[in-house]
Structures are given as structure tokens and as C-alpha cells.
Amino acid sequence: MSRAILRHADFRRLWIADLLSQLGGRLGMMAIPLLAVLTLDASTLQVSLLRTCETAAWLVLGLFAGAWVDRVRCLPVLIAADLGRAVLFGSIPVAAAFGVLGLAQLYVVLALGGLLTVLFDVAHSAYPPRLLLPDQLLPGNARLAANHSVAAVIGAGAGGVLVQWLSAAVTIGLNALGFLWSALWLCSIRTPEPRPVPPERPNLRREIGEGLRYVFRHPLLRPLALNSATTMLFQAAASAVIMVFLVREVHLSPSTIGLLSMIGLLGALAASALTERVSRWIGDARAQLLAAIGLGVAFLLQAMTGPGWALAWYVGSTLLAAACIIVGYILQVSTRQRVCPAGLQGRVSATMSFVGWGAMPIGSLLGGVLGTAFGLRPTLWIAGAATLLGAGWLLFSPYRTLRTIPDSHFEPA
Image 1 (tube, helix red, strand yellow):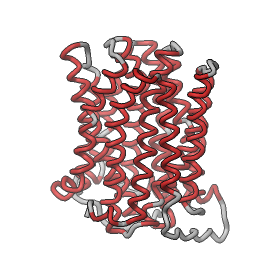
Image 2: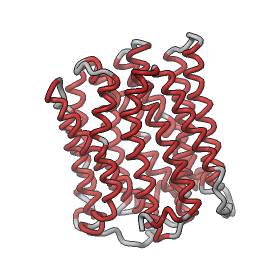
Image 3: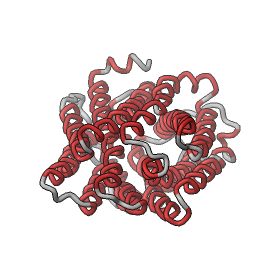
Image 4: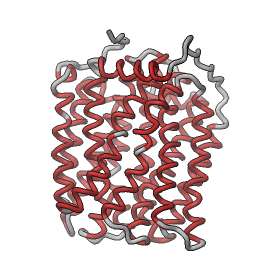
């Protein structure tokens, strides 16, 4: 079924557009902190603030975006968000060419780009159920998750090499082109998307509250949301310092960082291809639990990275982490789409994203503070231990005894 889904012409267009958007984003994820460290001589705290600016939009806009997306067509939102991000990130190489680029512009671009990313991600998550049949959702989500894997591998390797060959600013310009090309593919989708039926009495606060109540009263979504919040809080803390750690303590060049990351992220490609098989073999509920535990172990291993042969810890940890993130992502999205009524898809998606991604700006700031106060390697140890403990939200929930996710909706009391 995973290959057959690509025979759906408009899903194939969505899949290609998503891949291009993901590739652009991954190039930026590698190039922007390297630009700050190598060109603008940013401190550990200043680098962590870049990620804080990028993800703070989930705290500002996340819940509103879900309620709004449930009222509108998703496809125009996706196109507009891609075009807006192309303009924003395209301004960075232009400013660099005129010699006026500074950290302030990076903060503004990432903050505004983050707002557009929130709208894009919520609409992107709510769109597949409007395009696909229910039995196409798992293979469709697996294909879209494979884009995360491919983009992570190519973006990590190519990003480091391009930064070294072309400069970080030019690499960010390629990021902008990726968003533009994605928008063009989205414009080619022809399947009519019906406008959602508006609520009889529109009330934004009530609609947001319905999404929150559904998630936190649902016996399967609540532990997923809490695990996601814990994981992404400390994943962000580690991500905020890892680039500084690899450049200033392990003394790696951008191309070496990209190559090592690319090798490690091959685990994500394997995971996206094998998630359906693993889900059938051990059950999707058990697979989600094991992925959460594996991610914590991976972040602990990352803290053991060092020069020489100790670089193998970075490769191995990235391999395991990428595989666990992809397995968890595919199964979490499929679980949410299966147990959630159609009229709540956008709000439930936004609530889950708000809880998880909303923790990231706090985690990025926490990573910068911990890295400044205690050092970069101790920060990685703390993040790994806390991520492993976060698997307890699933371990002490129905996931411990379930094998598969029941295919039914749950109405909160």
C-alpha cells in the first residue's frame, strides 16, 4: 500500500511539495546556526535564542491556528505559507551581499518564519484526511514522514558542504528556493477541497477549548501529548548547544558535521520504510512506547561524543534518535487521525503541536542557560536523562498493555 499511495496523483504532488519544503528547511537548520557561530561570532546563548525565536510562534499562534484551520481550506494556507517563507529567508543572502546582515535580522526572520511554519504545519497535518481515504492515511503519513528522513539526510550532508563551499548565507538562499518550488507544486493539486462547514455560533475560545479538552481527556492522546512536551523540551535544549559543541569543543568543520549527521540520519530513512512492518509485527502502541525509550537512550549516547573514535557516539546516537523520531512521528499522527473526529482534526493537531512545539522555545532557552552555566557536555547529559524519563508518560499509561490502537473516536465527558 505504501507504494500504491503514490499512484494518487494529487497526493504525489503533495508529497513532492512537502519534500522540497523539508529540504529547504533542513538546509536552513544547518546553515543558520553555522552562520551565527562562524560569521557573526555569536555566543552559546545567542545561538540558542535563534531556535527560541523560530519555535516561539507555537506558543503565540499554535492553538488559534488549529481552530482557524478547521474553518478554512488547507491548500491555500500551505501555498501562502511557503511563499512567505521564501521571501523571508531570501532576504538573508541579500543582506549578506550588501554587508548589512546581523543577528537582529536573523531573529526577525526566524520569528516571522516561525509564525508561517505554524500555519503550514497545522494545515499540512489536517489536509491528508481531506485528500485521502481512511485506509490510505497510514501509508500516506509514512510517505510524508519519509520526506523528513530524506530531507534530514540530504540537508545535513549537503548543508555542511554548501556552507563550506558557498557560505552559509548562500545556502540559506537555497532554503528560500526550496519553499518557492514547494509552493509551485502545491498549486498543481487539482482535487477539490470542500470548505469546512462553519460552526453555527463561531466562538474561538470555545473551539480552542474543545481541542484542548479532547486531547487531555483522551486516554491515548494525553500521554502522547505529555511525552511529546517532555521530549521536545529537552531535545530543543540539546539542539540549542550541539552545533556550538561540535565546532568549539570537538573542533569539527561544517562539512564534517554535515557528513556525520548525514550518516547518522540514515536511520530515519530505514525507519520510514519499516514503520508499517514494525507496526504490524509488534503493534503500533508498543512501537510508540519503544520509540520513546529509544530516543532517550540516543540522547544519552550523544553526550559521549568526542574527537577521534569518540565521534562514533555522535553517529550512533543520531542514527538511533532519527529512527525513533520517525517511528514515533508516523504512529502518533496516524493515531491522532484515527481516533479524532473529522471536525476536530485541525484543533487536535494544533493542540498536540502546541504542547510539543510550544515546549521548544523554552527548551532552547534552557539549553543556552545550562550551556553557559554548566558547560556544553553537561547540558547534553541532562537533556538525555530527562528525555529518557519522559518515556514514563507512555510507560505508565494504556500504551503499556495495548498492542494496537483502537479504531474509534472518543467523546470527552
